[in-house]
Length: 152
Image 1 (cartoon, helix red, strand yellow):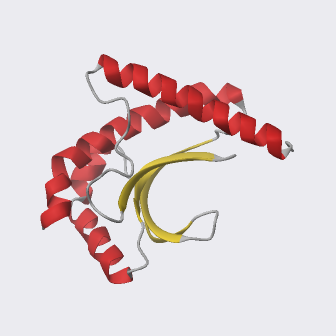
Image 2 (cartoon, rainbow, N blue to C red):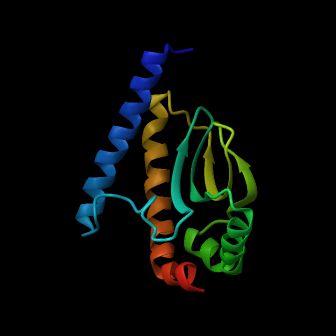
């Protein structure tokens, strides 16, 4: 077990390395350095990374206490499920009621990689690659369907 300080240092190092890698690779493809994440243009719909001691996840979180709005967005995503999973080149995990570590309930659609650990720097290269590759696919899908989520 790590001290709070060591744990914080490792998490910061993990994310700093990922940010540096992402910016360099995205700029080489003439893309903005930053990911869309919270800037989707659709309130309550966010693209997310998650990494802990067991898994890395890349996906979409629907974050609103208004359950009707959350279900509406979830159903819109379900209506393009086949296209989304084809874009991701993998089936995704669909959870209408996903409970985060902080206890907050969200809806989450995600892909994950097991056997990685944010506190084990030996797993970082494969984790970073998984996260980068899958967020690139997810962003490309989202950019193509953004108007559908905004206006339909």
